[in-house]
Length: 488
Image (cartoon, rainbow, N blue to C red; front, top):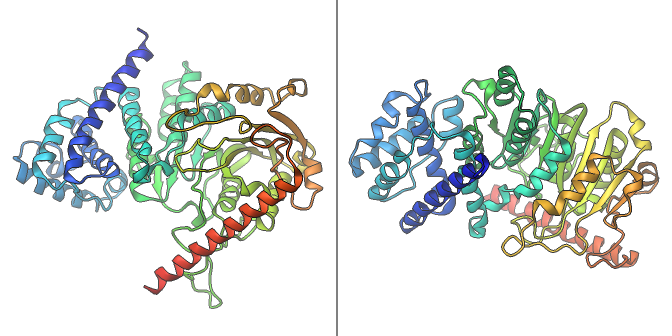
């Protein structure tokens, strides 16, 4: 059996073992996300103890926990989480606001001595323990009741996007809405896999200075940090942190990157408010983001992430961002953002994805690939629309998206969708200049409906209007909830 086959088997076995313990702990009322979170704390403590330079102080380390009987262990575990949560650096990122959610001391004792303590985690290859942890995150995402799926982009899609963008050694990569760090891991693995002759210095730069993620949700940020750490990415120095827990949209970026890969959350309501009232004070009920680097002030989160991605890119930098359908056809702020995107960037391609790709039900999404142009000459080129939606049915449970479903798109992307390759019914080239000549610069340019029949323009417009009305209602409800929250 090949080395990759052995690695896969070892990872699968470890995931199965970790998940079996989850089923035991569910009897204690522990949810899937809670279980994965508690595993994260314990894994970090164990691996720190296995390293002679581990960052955890001795009085809060694994040895102070593992030798105790169940009741004392339960007490000490709570003390450890509280103390480490007040630290800075990697400890603060992993343990901030951490608390013990395992109520039964006997079950905690079982987890510590029977699972975590039985494995030398530092001795495992990075791809074994990293893939095992990522497999656990995927199982967590598959549990639709937990809502964890919103942080997980299917791996076949991630891999295809990364192959199109093709990151190289020395390039910096950012995901401003990194979730559990799937894009960042795939980019890291792509660079290592395609460049076996990297020097030690290049590998160090890749591990400590090339990968950066930002995640708004604290619990998810710690999962992302742990995921990257288990893959050998990141360091304990502040400038080596692979993940930061903050709101990407709150401020203009201080650092620019060669590559941005992201699937930002779909929705309208942010965690903080960025506008200011007439007195110059930050207003809790103002949802539009006011940033000098943005082309348009809007409360639409997807439009703001497109603008933010542009700001993150260096001139010539490459990006891929997942967006819902309405971004391609809405008027108003969306039309203004599309125009700026077409004028300021080289739009390479738009990939229409079939419903059923993501864990959130019914989502119709697209991937926009673009580069930040050095000048305005990009507005005279062409871009490709690739329709993976027509006649394509996928389901997370019965027919998940496979990497082979995206092979044709990746192949054509890497040869810039040459004219002579247009015989495929799924791809068309469009003129940037012609789209800019239309009123709203609409990019919803599919030529067939989802069944493969030619699209009736009247029905297309009706569908767009319906989606716009639904989106406006969603925003109105979000605003009402925000107002109610500020009152209470």
